[in-house]
Image (cartoon, helix red, strand yellow):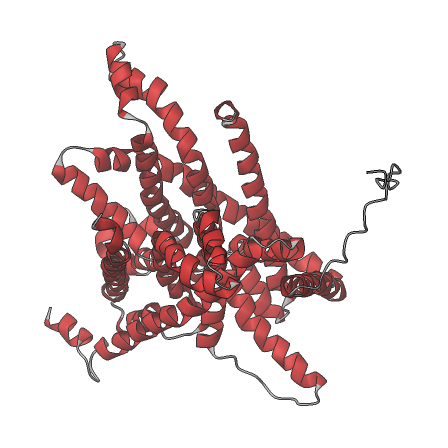
Length: 277
Length: 237
């Protein structure tokens, strides 16, 4: 009993953490990061060394014009497509089998084929019907590649947006419709004040994705002689055979997409803050 | 009508055989891209949920980059960029020869870049749907890390990821139409040539349109079958 020591071991500092092991994932992660950093430095160095004031003066205004064409085309087709998508979405949800099948066929056809095939069919294909189109006075519209691109994009995005809208409206629980009916609201009030505010919150993210997809997809109009950002890039490349033309286009597209994505995230965070706890 | 049938016949007079070749190229390009894209996408998804921050950031950069660029631009950058890059490399080595990159290779590579960055998101959300207990149970049984991944996690993962991957396959099929811009003789290229030669643009581009629609229909039937096959264990319950 008396052997028990009464002195305590004095407090020791915590042992040093063991050195971080060089695991396989740590090695590969560091290597990949080094690769990205090297690529970024290489990119900046390349653009710096390739900087040519003559080319900048000649092509910068063209890139700006191309950018304006791209943005106009995308925003117009998104807005007109949104208007066209409303009757399509209503048709999809209709109880009438003929109407709902027609709307489904429209959506399926435009979502099942490449945008570029649709564009070629409209731009080159409608040329086969030139006499008929001239007779009804539509040839003036379809003669122009820009109009054809707008037409094809509008039809395409309307199909996608109709599905977004339908999905969003159907995500609103039935009880919301029934509750509104029990309160004696009429159909317009129900849709406008009860259903749409809840549905559009759900639709916000897919709408953002659709805008980004259209922005990226719009690059294909360069193949039908519309000089958007991509078209100007291709023209500049074919004149100079200088690869930096494509790199600059990539930078512009990337900045546009990332800006849009972040703005949309911020918008969504703001609009859905009442749903977060 | 007779005229149209001749135009579409297989043989010297018609374009049927050329267009059939185009369908073959389109389908084989999509099929060649799929395994590469799935593999890279899976690896990127693993990287994104790694404990190592460098690996996570590197994977994020990859997806952000290739989801932020138009597919057509990625294609051109890979096609011309590789060509010029290899030429520069050869010049450094003292060789001087014009290099032509195979457009099929360039097409498959750029489509795989885009496909994998989207696929990694699908895999990542599937990974998140698998409870931690599945891993822990596997380790408790004394299985190695690789075995747990292969025998326990992967079979469940594929089933969860299938609908998302099916969507990506449809997108991939549609994106293959872009390779006609770098001269690969796919459906759109062949019908475009036929349209230019015969001046029957609506007929041939209409056929291209219908062929893509048919491919989409076949794919959706096949994907439904595969999904039903994947779910056969759940249905009996």
